Image (cartoon, rainbow, N blue to C red):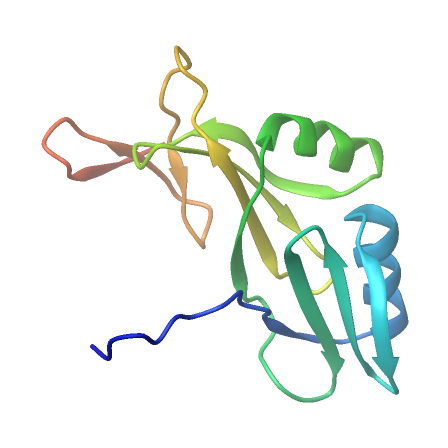
Length: 145
């Protein structure tokens, strides 16, 4: 490991099928601001989280991106009110986060997480194929139906 090298923020480049539709979703539904655009490539931002959208090249469809937020429950309500497709409602996880998953128009999954809510039970984990998994006391996972 090199001393003195610090990584900065990460801005994923997400491949999109319909650029205009995706820009509209990220600005109107997710609440981002369009920072710049060059043809079918752009940068959008909300707070410290940025996303680059690109039609036709770079990245792949159905990428998962984790985004830290200060309140997963409030974000869930905001996104539902704007018609977002919620993949998984706010759920406490064994790793200490409370996550809400939302699909963008291209099937990218935005896993938005804040601190777990004290006193709320741990939920099951929803994997990529929609399978549900429950954490066990020994740290293993068991599939549940």
